[in-house]
Image (cartoon, rainbow, N blue to C red):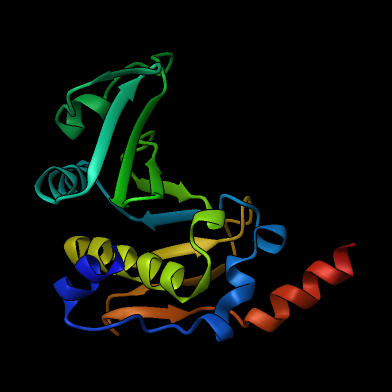
Length: 180
């Protein structure tokens, strides 16, 4: 499962479950944290589409809930504002679903369900996926708590060529307790 993403990179995850478990807690982060790549263009979306097509990941493209072939990114991103919703559902490994929602040429936006990414294996799967995507794009890929777009907690750093922490996992827990 995870091994195929790690074999592509010749290494294991940069993060350890015991250190980051709060960032994988659906009660603290929301079940569907927000993951994004900022400062992109249509060409970057096309890179994502090409990566999905060329990988051995399972995927399904749909418009308005109707499945179909994955069109060129320019066609998806130039649809009228009132067009049906588009989803690109990707399964980098069995049991893990990543949902891309191509709505803007300026941002690649996707999410996944933290309940599918528990334990060290979940951390490794996420790190492998963010690394693969970040390397392909040559850009940072950041994760925030659901709806908290301004405060990334972890992400792929292209300068470091790995997934790094961007916040203290202990502070997330303390913040959640204070909010109750």
